[in-house]
Image 1 (cartoon, rainbow, N blue to C red):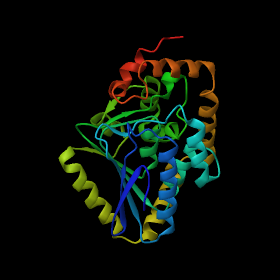
Image 2: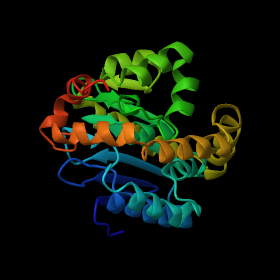
Image 3: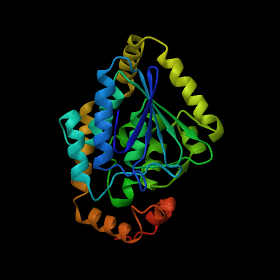
Length: 273
């Protein structure tokens, strides 16, 4: 499998996928296009059972969406789901027969958080993983399923804290809140995930499918709820308030690699209008 922003290596029934979309792994048209193609190819080949996603960039897993190219990446998502919505793309991944594991080192914010939440399991580097659902800083709702997943995983109060504060959370807090399965020392993370992925892949695919179907029937929000959040985000991002705050953030370094190392501070300093 050859992609522009993904490097894929197969080990038996497991695909190990590395995300490499310089300069900071923004979720833009190229990355969405490659994710759509990867999901299609993996689902079409019964030899594959498990996908492990990790990043080539130690500072960024997936930073967030490229706010300058919203229409374009939504159009790429439509090539899998028929609708211009990354929320529905991510929900498709959650409902897929494939078992997906996010191995997180570095920053995962906004739609990056929503991508890992769409994966079946999440394991993070204790020392370096950082999480944020920061759309409220722009007057927006998470549009890729974040509100649906976080409320179910964290509970009402913590979900509101995470989304309304637009703060950064370290891996230990994310583990304690239920955002991720576990935080592990970085030197142990790779081996732990590899062993788990191969163990799961050694079991029958029929069991994977039926377990996921029953768990999703309890814990995964209906398609209509993902669609509604996606529509609210698409409407909100066109409002004068959101446009103004995004422009102010870009003026302060938003969507540049160095400035986003401390994005929570940048967002906290946006003018209050």
